[in-house]
Image 1: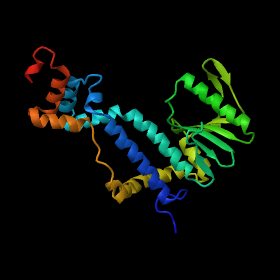
Image 2: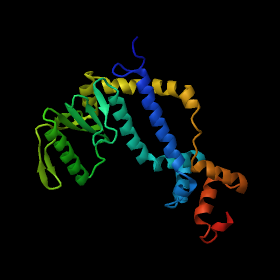
Image 3: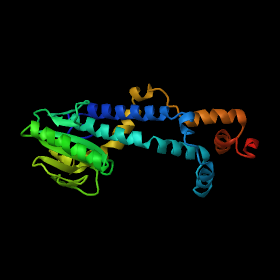
Image 4: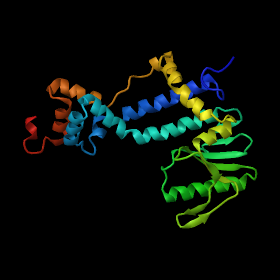
Length: 254
């Protein structure tokens, strides 16, 4: 029977990867309590301009601000999603904290996957090159890749050049864009495009499933703030301003 979503992994595996990412989203949102949201002080003057100039409701604006705060955590989880998807391709497996993100079961390929091309500083890049070079030295037939899922162009070439003031080069260490790496692992040139096209359908199917329906309802700072507005009768922004700046002159009148 043909797969419903993509050709290179089973429908069950893709839905499992989506479920794992959904769990990461819920965990990240739950971790943003009112206390953590207020930690760096909320600029409610800017939020007032944002709300009125952009015609966004106060609740939607605060939800967007919460999502902005959890964006880094979610970006890391998106990288994990790609690792898990590719780990479901026949002949490959995920690293599970073994030092690599994905490998060929016959040790012919090792890879470290980053979701975006600009997520590492020079020291991190140097450490990654050295790690990949060690894998290449230990496994004489292995090609080792730094994978950039979202890159500025499509490419697959040796990773050479100056890193942190030192020249690095290895005959079996490469840099590769996400589309090329998906094509390499799956042997299907349009594999990443297949995934992109299938995701809306697969995500909707997952969200309509019994598994998703049984998930604990997400909580966030916004729920706590809204609960306070029910008691104080303040607007959302006034409540946030009062709780952050009531010690400022006049602000205790809100």
